[in-house]
View 1 (cartoon, each protein chain N blue to C red):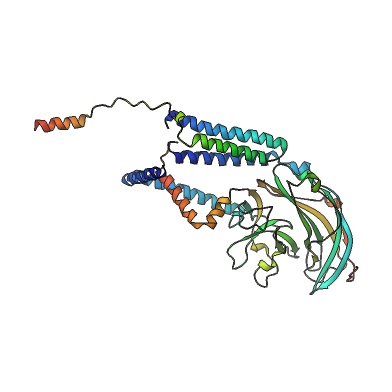
View 2: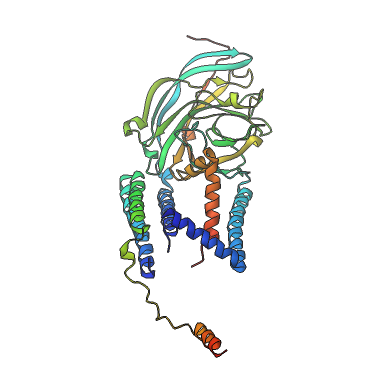
Length: 179
Length: 184
Length: 85
């Protein structure tokens, strides 16, 4: 503590350690939050299948869906944003399980509370439902919404819609372009 | 004032050179700092089974989830990676690993997976970034799953990366301080 | 900076940063917004840097009292020896 350099070093080092400490405390203060406060998923279901086609040798389906979910409960002061995504999962002959993200959205903590409620009908998919082969016809597809918590400091953790409320639909047995 | 300080440091160094026992002690001190850092790194590598357990985000392709300079902690000891996970993967013949999110998971009957990734802030998926002809990532391409994050601290690393001269200045200064500062 | 000053300086920045951070933390927890912590910490940091880094006069109020210097016997001895030669 006898020279300017040593004092500068001491203040900066202690300051950064303190900031780290406060961040960790903030993370600790919200342990278990995700068990008590879960986004409220009211609706997620297929609205209409737009088309199911063979596209360059692989099957591709386009569809839209209804989504109504209140994300407010998941937010607290150590959450920077929520990454929300809708996953379609199905089994095929080649694969035990296929999981494909159809749509996603980033909801930031700074967004006003009313925009943390997603209530939209016939949302068109952002990413088409594309199989690895030609094996989509007649398959049962589950639609499930999941979310990834992005903290300011600390551990990332996922959440998903309760399995019992997950909706599913069966793709047609023939190619269609129902428009 | 600055010149005064530099002179002081030079004087300290000269004194140190005269006093061989003190010099040896300070060098050992420096070595201890370097080796404990190395030990922590290697220990983390062992626990997480990842070849780089801590990475700094260098691009904006995952904004706003991760900005340039955020620090990510990786874990590669997880068996399965799922859809929506943020993972760090490496493409053959490319030096810099990429941090992106998993968009598609195809699980084969023998439990191997084929994955497709995409950056949150990118418009298209990552096929264009993969090696020519490569359509899917395998589990072994993945260096780790992001499990924790720390904001802002990594800005220093970005600065060091953008201006290499800073690196030598910083390392030099730190070495100087360790050599010339006396305990207590 | 004298010894008392060093002690005071170290205690000062320690408590300033902790206090500002703690107040910000509580405020942030109530409002559920971490930005409060960051700004409060920043203010504490700035104050600490201004108060503790430069060598202000109030850190030099207890100058070390050295003992009276003793006349150097060795030099005296030498001169005595040379005179006796």
